[in-house]
Image (cartoon, rainbow, N blue to C red; front, side, top):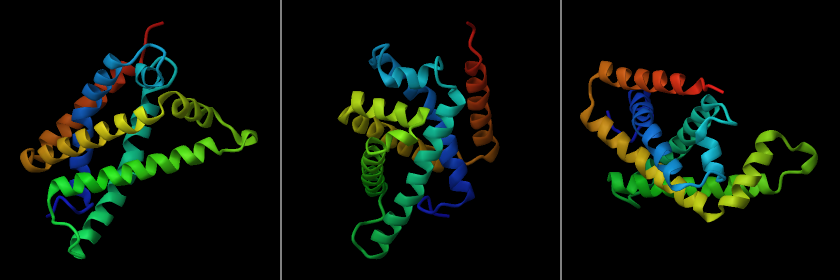
Amino acid sequence: MSIYEFEPNNLLNWITAFAIFEIPLALFYLSISSKKDTVTNWYSGKDINIWNVIAQDALYVICGIIIALRIFNYLVNQKKISKKFYNFILVFLAVQLTGDLLFALTIKSWPDKYKTYWISYFQNYINKSGLYALFGDSIYIITWSLAFYVVANYIKSFDVRIFIVSLFFFLVSAYSVRQK
């Protein structure tokens, strides 16, 4: 089995990697952001349900993983790049940057009469964050990729990976109920 294929075991590896890095990276982002930053609003759990944050963080990037793996394997098969993990990360970063830019262009040009909470939220995020969002998302992609590499190569046991994912969901569940 290759780590460069999107199949069930690797999906579990990607999800396990997410469970390992999401909370520490969120805490890092919170530590470098001001209270008024949209990233603070995103991860604080005050205004946005943390389950929304987890779903949007994970699912948006899993789409990028699938695209990046397709492009990476195509480039390897065409002998344009070698089958090295750092090349995969570079392809993944290119996919992420392209996706973020297309997302920003779409959101910024969204007609006002069809605005929703999320359209307004992301328009505000784009306006406030600018290029810092691309930098933050790049850190996110690199961190998730490196965590995946560690999981895929060093955490072979199915039960350990399920334990990590279960512990993550337990912690998120505990965090999701906030006292007022």
